[in-house]
Amino acid sequence: MTEHAARHRRHPLPSRPVRIAAAQAQAEAGGVEANAATVAAMVHDAARAGARLVVFPEKFLSGYEPDLVRSDPQRCAVRPGDPRLAPIAGACRETGTIAVVGAAFHDQGDLYVSALVVDADGELAARYDKQHLFESEREIYRAGAAGCTLELEGWRLGLGICYDSGFPEHARAAALDGCHAYVVGALFGVGNGYQESRTWFPARALDNSCYAVLANHIGTTGGWNACGSSAVWGPDGRPLAEAAVDRPELITADLDPRVLRAARDAEPVPGDPGETTTHTRMRHRLG
Image (tube, rainbow, N blue to C red; front, side, top):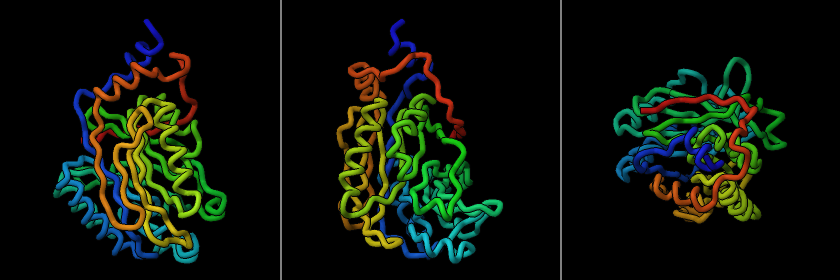
């Protein structure tokens, strides 16, 4: 058996396509309720566009806003069972859509940069905490201890948050767990952010023969001028969809197992077929 065949025998491909969405909008600084309402509205938009899952930017529920979060975590960070998440839960339940929402999260005295996964029943089904903190974040937040893989209709989706995507080993750990897509909420800014994201994400896709999905902020948040341009890349590293630089927008793309198979047949993922990751991962089956 070839290396490529052995790898795919361990991690079979999905049987049918799934549509996912990336959403970008202007976050209100510290306005968890207002931002939750924006998320809920865009979940409905994603459902109308036929998406089963929609991802939002990093810390969207408060805005990026490190100073605000540090000075008033009670207001800016969400907690387990937080009633301010109710509009999001309701939108997911009403539409049967899954939302991956960026938030500052307060848990047992520690703050995390988190991606909250609200499932189609409106339940908080999973939480991924950012593992690679940006230098300025280390004074406020605790790094996550584990990766996170979501399973949806046979698709395995590895979650990341912003700076995670700059580390090839982060997406690699997802690929070694059988992930077919690398899904990231982020803040990339005007200046070098566009070039940075357009280097990292095609590389993560091409390195691992997987789809890559980015949801980015627009406007100003936490002193950063975001560059928008949320996007999806195919498993050959080529762009499939891209949003505008400066306006609220929802983009969708169909993840197709035939395209994935063709890419992996053309460019087998490099590495030993027995290669494993030492990174701890959580796995959550959705729907």
